[in-house]
Structures are given as C-alpha cells and as structure tokens.
Image 1 (cartoon, helix red, strand yellow):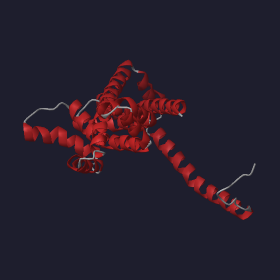
Image 2: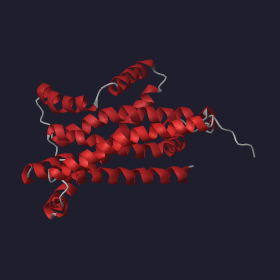
Image 3: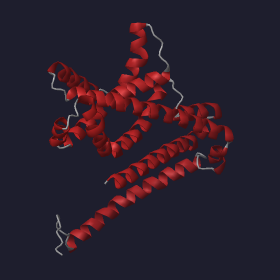
Length: 266
C-alpha cells in the first residue's frame, strides 16, 4: 500500500528551528500564566471561600433557571427557523421570478446584518412604529429567527440542489405532483442530509441567546450578572466561570448528539 504525503517532512535543521521557536514562545506564555495566577491569588480570587459560592443552593437555582430560559429561547428559535427557513428556500428556488427575486434579496440582506441589531429592531423599533408591546422573550426569539431562518434557508436549498433531478421527474411520471412530491419524496431526504447541521445550529443559537442580556431577558448570562450584583464583585470570577461551564456542557452535549447523528446517517 503506497502512502501519499501532501507535505515535506522537516529535516534536522528545520526540526531544531521548530524546537527553538517552541521554547522561545513557551517561556513568555508560561510567564504570563504565572503572572495571572499570582495576581488572582493576591486579590483573593482563587481562595476556596470565593469558589464555594458555586455550591450555594440559591446560586445553583438561579443559574439553572437562567439555563432553562436559555434553552427555551434556543428551542423555540430553532423550530421557527426551520419552518421559516424551509419557506424561504422554496421561495428562492421558485420558477416565479416575482417570488424568487424578493426572497433572495431578503435572505442576503438578513445574512448581512448583525443579530443584535435585529433584536434591537424588534424590541425597540416595532413598539415605536406600531405601539405594540413586545416581551423580551419574543423580541429575542424573533430577532434570532430572522437571522437563523436566512441561514437555514441556504442549508435547505443546498440540500434540495444536492438531490438527483431524476427523483422529481420520476415522481411526476408516477403521478405524484406538487406538495406530495415535496412532502413524501424530497423533504425527507433533505432533512436526513442536513440533520447534523441542524444540531450544530442549535449550538450556535444557544450561545447567541446570550444577546438577551442587552434587552433584559433573564437568560443564563444575566442570571449570573444578577447573582454578582447581589453577592458582591468578589464572586464575579467564580460565578462567570460557572456560567461558562454550563455553556460548555450544553454545547458539548449538542455536539455529541450531532456526531452520533452523523455516524448513524452516514
């Protein structure tokens, strides 16, 4: 069996040079870590008493409540994004130019806007124009759905374009047309292809839900901030570390699910 390498193996001189540069870069990096640890220790941030706050029942309940609020936003956003994204993909692939052209402009415009701007637009702009009061939950969800649906529409469109054209022609030949072709033949295959990507989008939406902090929605990040305001600034590092750990755990679990789905659908 022949081994093919796409790079040149470093020679003795190059290996010595690599080890030298590794040492040169490792020394200041290690010095920086020592300085940070020393500074934190002098300020008492690394004391066990400060970190024991993460075992306090009230803090745990507050952070878990914020985590549930985060997952609620992420779940509703993903479901709505799937529905709207599918409709946008079908509209963009339509043979009717009066439908495909505006849909394309809509998708490209939303993909070029930052999510926080969309959230502010819903939370502040819509009440200013219509006089309707929008809760922080729905302002956050709608803002995220506007952005995520544009991304999901591209995923759906790529899935449809990847299918062999003969399947639709065969369905027409068998007398299956219109909505039935989409529902029973094309869409199941597309969902099967993009399902791992959907889980990855769930990870992104979970992290993007932290934007609720800026409009006062009590998600995980704001729950941590409120706990710090109540307990004192000396607990900021431990509590934010706990918040970060919860985000990492959720994202790792979702990534694990995505990997399992990819293996099973392969």
